Amino acid sequence: MPTAADPTGRYAEFHARSLREPEAFWAEQAALIDWQEPWSQVLDASKPPFARWFVGGRTNLCHNAVDRHAAAHPERRALIWVSTEVDQEREWNFAELQQEVEAAAAMLKRRGVGRGDRVLIYCPMVPEAAFAMLACARIGAIHSVVFGGFASHSLAGRIEDCSPKLIVSCDAGSRAGKLQPYQPLLEEALRLSQHKVEQVLWIDRGLVPLQPQAGRDFIYASEREAVRGQRVPCEWLESNEVSYTLYTSGTTGRPKGVQRDVGGYAVALAASIRHIFDGQPGETFFSTSDIGWVVGHSYIVYGPLIAGMATLMVEGTPVRPDPGIWWRLVQKYQVRVMFSAPTAVRVLRKADPSYLTQSDLSSLRALFLAGEPLDEPTARWIRDALNKPVVDNYWQTETGWPILTLARGVAPMHERLGSPGLPMYGYHALLVDPETGATLEGPNQKGVLALDYPLPPGCLQTVWGDDERFVKTYWSSIPGRQLYSTFDVATRDADGYTFILGRSDDVINVAGHRLGTREIEESIASVAEVAEVAVVGVADELKGQVAVAFVVPKQAMPEDALAAAVMQRVNEQLGAVARPARVLVVQALPKTRSGKLLRRAMQALCEGRELGDLSTLEDAATLQALAERLKPA
Ligand code: ATP
Ligand code: MG
Image 1 (cartoon, helix red, strand yellow):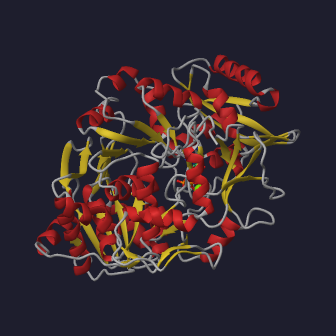
Image 2 (image 1 turned 120 degrees about the vertical axis):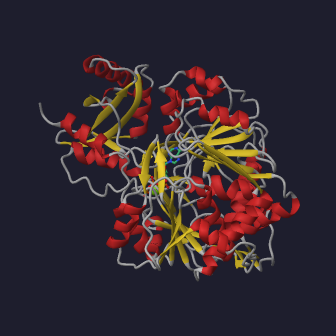
């Protein structure tokens, strides 16, 4: 049936079939990758909520990402690496990439790493980190990439959780021109961790001196020499063996170690590049994320390469040396598909918009954004500034690829600003009442976004080492039903567009009215003077909860005037119940390292509670400043 989003109705049929005949549907998608041995069963759903895809099939992520393209198109560009931090730019074609990955695999094997062993990768955005990930995939070792910005405490927890046989690290990263040496952080983490790590492979960029420990430490370049010329074939893995573990961002508490398979993930990524991102072999994909996040795994390293695309990996920020940098790269490398986050767009929005139009962007087909709610004013601004489709996509570390977006590769789709779009094929997405578990069918009802069993290929198999936590955390929170909870609250309009209103713990209950923080934030963001805003619900004796808004202005201005404008706007758009009890003007908001607002910490601060686990906080000074602002005068 044609709808506003899907005027031909083709996508609706595609989606319906994926749920009606999941085995036939996914068997077709599985033809997008190479299999060394075919599967005996497409889906094993005998132990809900666990699901196994392509049972008995043998394949390899590295073969699909590298070797098969190196064989067919050795000269085709594969990896482009740009560092605006150390002013370097390099590229590898598929044949060269295979050589580097085989070398890294040989280094790992030489150190006794094999199938099923864990390798922790704690690196900045250097090409060797991508080589190491692919090398692990090649030999069947399980990588666990930890974002290079994490401090010792966070790193130690992850080392303990995945107990690696070897760690790959680097002398230093650089961010906004400031060097960050890694060795002191890693040494401290190793000291804090119960798990003893026997080997560390150091990438030495020559940025800061390393102090290698004899017997424990090895240097990448010398090991590279030692294995010169050695060939390492791909290990053919059963589809359900573990490819990697990766921790969630920790926005709401202790991060969960998401565990991913091999075959299902490869198929899901290949299908998503085709149906969602509409990327073709030989084109260039540019994701501005970091390899430490799921977007970096799926759409810097594995997805584009599996699809035979070149991937552009950048070490740097969107505004250095100036806010034109990303767009110059788009022009230079003829980027077709770009993927970024709302937080980066908000940074750009503070700069002169002419930077966005100084480059020739004719190669670019669309900009995809994910990670946080994309409010309408931000979406409109970047869409108009680039004059390109801007496609919001909603998903989680857990799912590995988008849950909600628009499948532009399947059919012509129309976006609606403020909504990530429709449930993707394979996902049976429902809105449910969190109190009763009832499915909400009608339009414009608020509920928790849940997914019915089984999750499609590519999604988490379990929580690493903790099946019970997997079942308890994700599949047991909706009364009376075994559904996967996203813990995000959403609503669906009459045309079927889903809107994410915020996390379920962020819903504010003002005198019995349930309000998503997102709705209030969106209203406030539409005030012209506002650059960024965060709204949290704060306990209130009279009303249960009230909204408190933290507002970052575009330019310095009197607090009273801005607060009045904000209150008036919310009053007009949402009514008095939603009007914040307090509006505080601040210079910056506390965010996780991945750019997500830490509402949990802001709320605790307002309520005078313990702040909880802050290991993923980007900049402690922002919280300090908020605390100062909250002190009674
Ligand atoms: P943790 O689960 O450890 O608290 P996290 O949920 O922030 O951390 P991620 O998996 O990185 O870790 O983030 C997924 C979450 O990000 C989603 O559940 C949702 O809340 C938010 N999100 C991602 N993309 C979007 C989007 N396009 N629109 C709205 N929210 C989004
Ligand atoms: Mg989460």
